[in-house]
Image (tube, rainbow, N blue to C red; front, side, top):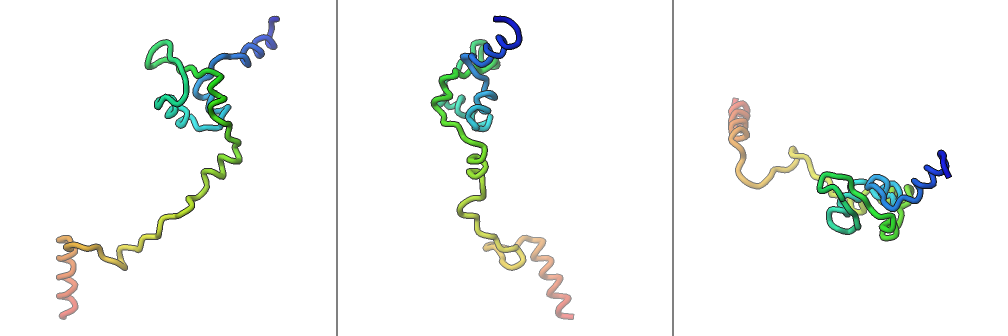
Length: 115
């Protein structure tokens, strides 16, 4: 077999995937794949050392169930319990002493009100 069809068949039978390809197949983000690799959750090899290509065996695809794009979008939605709204600084004051600039401003306002 020779020609473009043979090359295409050879690419499909690759025993290893790059982190980018693994990310595309599983639906995980590339940063999640890299985090899994760093923590040892995915088997991989780096034949040339720390700064060379990372190869993930195709069998590792069985370890992570694929995520459909629609499921990933719903999983990212708004949080279940949104944080409470914080009141503005104008309506409430924080405990503790007032800063020097606020003390001076308060003294100036008090003098203006006396007049």
